[in-house]
Length: 120
Image (cartoon, rainbow, N blue to C red):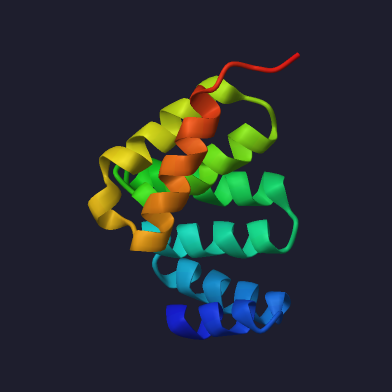
């Protein structure tokens, strides 16, 4: 079912993707990866607060969930919260073996960006 939700989201059918994920979460509310997928769907739909809430639940359920930490780090960086971004992205990079090669590079680049001094 997660693959179905991902396919829906990839095709722009956000409502259908959310419907599938919520069906999964009704049966398995402690499934951290489903919360991560929900957060990703919200992120892609331009809903950063909903994304952060779902991703935070994924991390609450699995503190080592690197993809959720990475996306939370990006959201924090976009919001200007460099401290949170560094912390979240640091966890993601530490657990880089749990990321795809593309996401490893993405998280590492975002962490480098979060470490740069602010330009005023």
